[in-house]
Image (cartoon, rainbow, N blue to C red):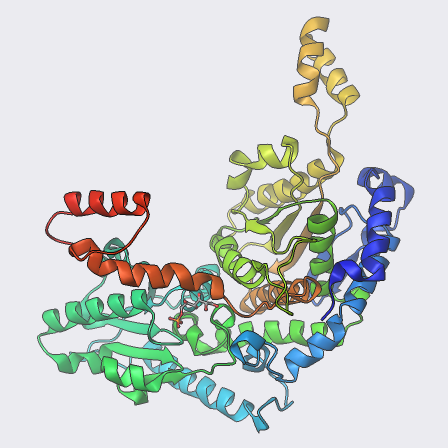
Length: 549
Ligand code: G6Q
């Protein structure tokens, strides 16, 4: 266990930061015509251009030394080998086994998990195909037209993000819906759009004990049984994805209609498992396997590439550079792609649930440095008309990732050129800014008086030197998306290693859940011990709740 601040590289990075923090990236480009190529990496059609970051060759060497000193190589090997690196839960971390397209065996406790992984993939293929070709029918022998995934957190965000991102691959006449929130509005809105005879519910829950998912699933079942008039209908309209066979049976789903996964798959890393059943059904198993193949390419790259040429490692290192040395507390992810409209929400869970930790691996409270940043974002160009002002001229330094595909799935004349121009231009504007002299010249040319020019110059000046990284792909195919997601997953892992935290547990979500469970009966009359504010809120709710809650 390495406290990163005690490494030689960290100390060297501190000193280096003093030297380079004033460097202007725009000048680094003028001084070095090869900068773009030297600070870019490629992986098949993916271009990872990090040349607009505030880094020199020395910065990258020191950051990779930091990775070396923190044992990144060793941790990568330990993760892939099936060691129980999720120590606080005593589990291996093997989402990479789910997309292992090679013939390498992967062992957990001495047993190869690959036969099981392949068995479930075949089960998914059979099922998804039968729904898509209409051989799987509902209780009244009608083909399925709507698939409703009921799950939350990791059992929702990955499936919804990927399914939305891959809309061009949807089968015509088959629609996907997602219900996650316990707020009755979520389920009601979806049920309003579907017909019981042609709807399939996938109940996705690793534990099959999650309150929101089980309550939503029971309400969906009641809705179906009331409308189709028999409990027998459940068999043709409900399937489960879980690690908990007993709870699935207890809910009333035949284990033959259960798609298994395993405790070595973390919830937020589970879209590659049977949790992806909804994705596979909507886009087809061949496309789902392309998604896995893209992730596998990244896994192989991550496992074998030298740290200096390892894209997730460089992504992680850049994040640490800004977060720990420049004090950047957030990171913006800006896909210039409408189909990635849930990408930031997905990444928020992947990153913030993994690295939002303040206990180090040896149990000490971390006080010398900060861990996981706030991750946020929205698709461009919309985001430009919303929060980009702060990115360009605000007082915070916010490193940005721009993500864009060269080709659109929906080419309408001129749209893609404008979209891509905006993406590239925003990154350029962030880096170059506009000096006071440039702003002054522009204003003078517009014919304003000297006083007006002087007054406006500070407002029209852009400091620039705002770092960004651009990830470009040829087209957002399932394979390209698989690569993209896996890059971020591994970035998060490397950062957790550097910050000396356990990235694969999530104890911080437990307390609120426990209190909420205990509070439910109090909302209908029983009494509990609380602070004044909590008592006041409960009392307000009781007075105003009405009779139908
Ligand atoms: C993810 C978390 C969490 C989890 C949900 C749903 O890593 O563990 O978001 O996915 O709480 O859990 P179940 O799948 O067990 O219902």
